[in-house]
Length: 468
Ligand SMILES: Cc1cc2nc3c(=O)[nH]c(=O)nc-3n(C[C@H](O)[C@H](O)[C@H](O)COP(=O)(O)O)c2cc1C
Image (cartoon, rainbow, N blue to C red):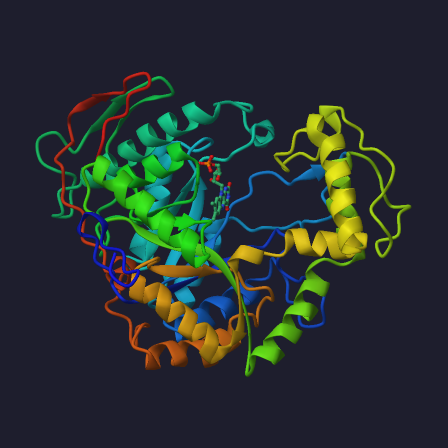
């Protein structure tokens, strides 16, 4: 490192920051109950955010995926806003009202099938002129499986073995078209796979797009998830936005990509982030108070605690102290989707009560401080935040940020109107789109064709080789 610049294994910082926007929909970080809030399902919200992002030269518009509503005590969870349109359908509609921005669909490997998903993503890629991407997720809970005929299956280790076989198969399907407008030569680009989870024999049904195939993002943070990304994806959607953490994360990924036989710059990183901006630092700090107050209202504060207490807490005052009543510790009463295990509830409640008491916090204040996207929030004046981001670009900590707006649909306005010009002045943000495809915006190389068509790939039970 020189002056903090990351140089591990020959890594070269691009010196640039890209932005993506993550339209989250179902979550408690977006304010859905203010006068300025739009709808989480109307096309108008999506159109406005995507077009604003495109005006700000954002590389990508992301949609997450939640295959089942979180539940608490048998009801949809109070912390979530129900209603999340299907990502690929929504992105297809957005492709028609945008012309440059990348369109990223979060799609699950655990509950999809490779031939079908590869075809649907190819469709989005073709109709958008080479702007599609797939954010590969595996889903970290079994209760989502109740929506599917397969049920909740695949433990953590197996999820990535399955995901890897899935993605390699999808890539082989995309590779199997010979580029001349018909499936490749004698073998008809036939792709066969025999494995633990599925056996398929498929020919691609669509030609390649302007960017060859969809760009691959990955969101998953475990060592297995990182190794999977290092072998298979183009960009990692990370949960490490704080500078020191981002630097460590980048170094970790450089080592993992090297172990996978790829170059240090072949895997890009875009952490999830939130921006609360103002003309001055003071104005931004005041705005932050307002944002936090709306993100966690009285009802949400109680609902947040209920998921850990495993019982109704509606009789408690959100502006009073944490409940003295003990949590119900049976695992069956935990909120589905919180990932929290009931057995730890009493210990955690004691710890939280002590912490809140020491800080003199009410339920609402405690929950606000716990749920604030503390590590991922950039708060300050346009120029001070631009300075911070320029430092990320200088050292090469990230390739960009995936921004979750706290207000829909206007949440990107000040970023595009004020932060982007400040970044452009500092020479760290694009002043125009580099091309017409997402791959071009991100400066990613067109994949080289491995010629896997026609081969029968037999998936080993656990070993998944490196590279493609
Ligand atoms: C920044 C980020 C965003 C994610 N977005 C989604 C999502 O929209 N839908 C989903 O099912 N999982 C999402 N995930 C979860 C991952 O797919 C994965 O299931 C989870 O992180 C567990 O994998 P891991 O053990 O490798 O971390 C996201 C994860 C991260 C880090």
